[in-house]
View 1 (cartoon, one colour):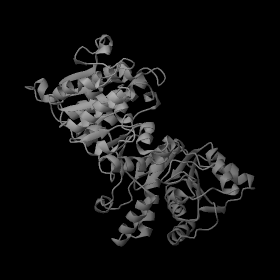
View 2 (cartoon, rainbow, N blue to C red; view 1 turned 90 degrees about the vertical axis):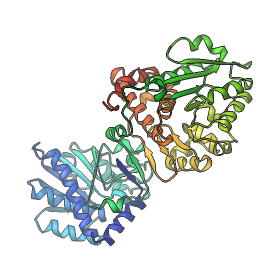
View 3 (tube, rainbow, N blue to C red; view 1 turned 45 degrees about the vertical axis):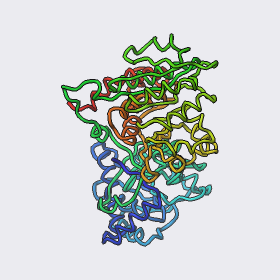
View 4 (cartoon, one colour; view 1 turned 90 degrees about the horizontal axis):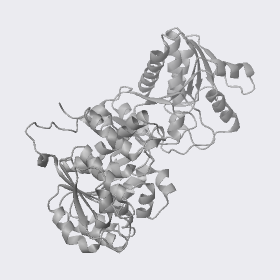
Length: 513
C-alpha cells in the first residue's frame, strides 16, 4: 500500500514526529539522504556524475543541500545554484553551512548569466529543490524562466517532493511548472502526483521513507493505492469440491432495445471473472441480441414498454429473481423513463442483497438521491463525472477539480460505497479513507468500459467480497486488464470486449493455487 497525504497532513505528521523526538533537522537529513540514495542508485554506475542542484530558501532547499553533500561525498561533481539567495529556514541554514564547509561550489541564480544557464542545460543531472510542497500562487517572470531552463535541460531532471511550481493538493497547473523526469516524494504521495494533468509533469514517481514510525503515520486517514500483491490478498482459495452455488448467483438487470450491448458486456464480464451463475434480466424486445454471445448466462426476459425498455409491469418477476440471487447490478443501458424509475426504486426498496447502481440506474435518480440512502441493503454507486454532477447538482468540471471532495459529497448524500470513475478512479466507503486506482490507460475511455467494470464488481460481490473490497478489486483488475488489452491491440484499437478477453488469463495471477 502506498499512502497519499495532503499538505496539511504531511505537516501534522512531521510535527508529530518532531514531538516524539525525531527533530526537524533529523527529518531533513533523512529526507536528503534518502533522495540522494535514489539518485545514486540510478547514476552511480552510469558515468554521468555532473550534478546541478538548484535550491530555494525553504525546507525543500534544505533537502537539496543534504543531497548536494551526499552526492559530493560519493564522487559527483556538484554545483549548487541558490534560486533566491541564501536560505532562511532555520534547518536549511544549518544544512547549507554543512554543505558549504565541504568546498562544494555555490552561486546565486542570475537569469542573465548565460554560462550558468548553460551549466543547467548541459548537466547530467539537474535536481530541482526550489519549492517542493511550498509553492503558492504564480511564479514571477524571473522564477518562471528558471523553471523553463530546468525543464529544457538535456540532463535528467529530478524534482524533490514535487516539481517546482506544482500545487500539492490540486491537479490544476499554474502557467509555468518544472517538467521532471523523476519526482521523489517524501513520506508519501501527494494528490498532484496522482491526478492529471499535474501527474503528467512528474515523470517517474518514487516515494521515500524518512524514518517516521508507522505508529505515527497510521493515525492519519488518507488516500492510498494498492499493488498486485495487496489485491491478491483479497482473494480466497477455491476448494476443489466446490459447485457453482459456492461462487455466487449474480443478477444483471440491464439493457434496452436501443442499448442491449450493455447487458451483454456486464453479463459476460461477470461470467469471466468467476461468478458461479449469472442471470441477465432484460426487456424482451432485446431478446434476439441477448442470445448472440455469452451462452453461459441465464436469460430472464421481462416485459417491455413501448420504448423497448423494462416495463414496470415486470416488478413481480424482478422480485422473484431478487430472492434468488446473492448480488444485483442494475442500470447498464436501461434508458431513462418513468418505468425505469419504478424498477430502480423497487430494487432499492426490496433487495436484501447488495446492489450495484450503475449508469442509467444513477441517471434516473436525478433529484431523488435520497432513495439510495434509504435502501434496505448495501449499495455501491459507480458514477462517471457527468453522472456524479447530475446527482450533486453541479458541473462535471466541479467534480474533476476535486475528485476526493466529490466522492466525499456523494457518500454523505447516499451512505453508499462510492466508485467515482474516470482516470484515477476513487473508491470510498466512509469519506475518510479513499482508494485511488493507479492502473489503466486512456484506451479504457470507450463505450461499454463501465459495463465491464460493473460486471466484474458484481461477480466479486456475489462471490462474497464486501462491497468496498469488491469495488477496489474490480476497479484495479478492470483497469489492469485494460493495460493488457492496450499491449495486445493498442489504446486506439482496444474495446470493452478486448478487456473481457484479458480477464481469464489475468485472474490466474490472483487466484490461490
